[in-house]
Image (cartoon, rainbow over all chains, first blue to last red):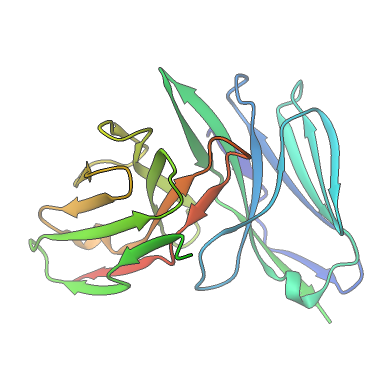
Length: 113
Length: 113
């Protein structure tokens, strides 16, 4: 099993709909979880981070974490065409005394007007 | 505030040539990373540095070397470039003290002929 797995996509939703992006991870010791958005030809930018089980809301975005199921998701409400991008899930992994962030392959989201 | 600066932004090499990608951050972060991104592959970690003077291999280190010159700078060297190293390379630094967020440079697009 890969360390971080995401829906391969692409995912297409109509404007105004809810987009649901999912991510599973293999390391039970992971403590920090991140969602990055990457527009074509640009660098990734952080949109959400979550550390505790449950939901975390920020505007139209909600991150959900279930450590028992090793699952983290991102919901985008009232999707807009400007949300069209690739969404990358990242999970921290501790090795020895250091920590690194491991990314999934990303899910490409298209929001249709 | 420049954040993370990568140079060069574009480079074309011939097989067997060497080159160094430079990265500098001005946010006083301890941790720095080099990732490569290929179509459909997400971000794959090449090397990371948890602090000045330390470096560790990531998922795809073969063919690369790194130097953490000081706290600000983390360079990536290709000693003998191969076509398989054609990719977009991202440097990032990490805010360990607050969110654990990665801040990315704009990327360096490398083509090896």
